[in-house]
Image 1 (tube, rainbow, N blue to C red):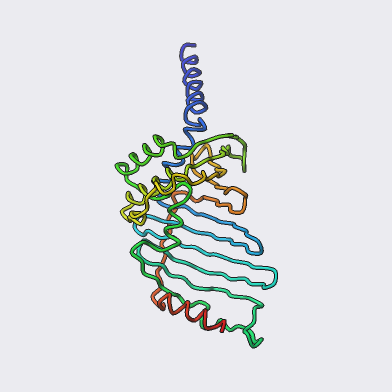
Image 2 (tube, helix red, strand yellow):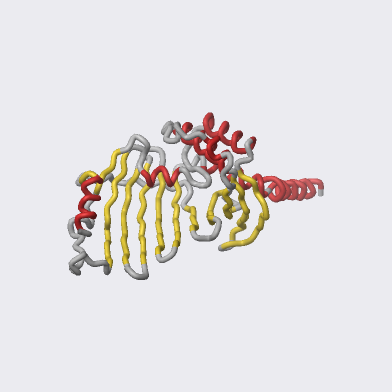
Length: 281
């Protein structure tokens, strides 16, 4: 009898810890932020619409043996000019490779002839940068920054995020999505403290891409607002909706890494851009 009671008490206390402590909405949010700061890999999808243009993008980020963001993007334009452009990008802290895999458009040259993109499609262009490839930077400097920081750098950053109240949470909703509990937060971010967080994160990664940025210049900027979704069980970020709903970012495959072979046959990115300009003349 005593043993049975002890088991029931243990089970009850475990449920209470899970329900009131580990799955507490605020605790879950900050756990997801910290998990993002110590991730080895994740996937990111982006959908963005503006007027007659739509962007769809999928990116795989990996850290560790290879720090890389590998992305595929489709840009579609409708209206007076119709176009469908697909690109592939391999981006890391030192360089970026980009190629056009598909270019379809009904745009014509000034003389009325069709545009010929054969000198562009599937030709890799390479850009070197001391500040990192554009896609790599964009993938790591999210609304919630992402990287694989060691504890001695991650913990001070988490303290700054909490002390400065970078994220203010409101209107928290809990629901089931695909059979899993998900918290949805309305998040307000003060621009100055957000920039300071990104600068501190950037410094912690050793990149120092934002070294010259002064967060104080954003003191009077309007706060930014987002809707953020987090999986309660895994305590991982799953979605960010930007104000207005024109851009939605999805996150998944947390912890998964992939190795990407860098192109060996490429031209300078400036030459690739020159070829694109030449086609339109």
